[in-house]
Image 1 (cartoon, rainbow, N blue to C red):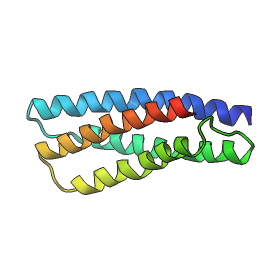
Image 2: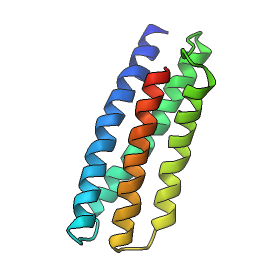
Image 3: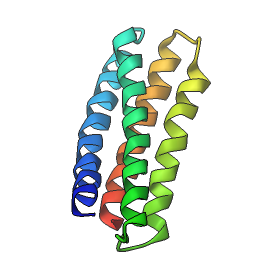
Length: 122
């Protein structure tokens, strides 16, 4: 249990950094009126996958007896991030424009807040 809880806690901090970097990168593209690169899109999808992995680690920790300090609220932030990231990506799919940069950068800023709140309630 200690290893799973450690990985879950460490992964949360990694995801905060990941989300901030993507948010800054996407915001830069938006304000410079540039299209998002394939590198940005693939990195965004990696963040979504790591978020899902983070959720699985949290579920494993829960099944092994660990409990978040504020219970259900901690899990709500995680479930939100797992559903929101691919949803935002699917919403912009096939839209190679400045609007895509705005939506994906905005989604990255929003999940940064969700990750911080998840850490503070965990």
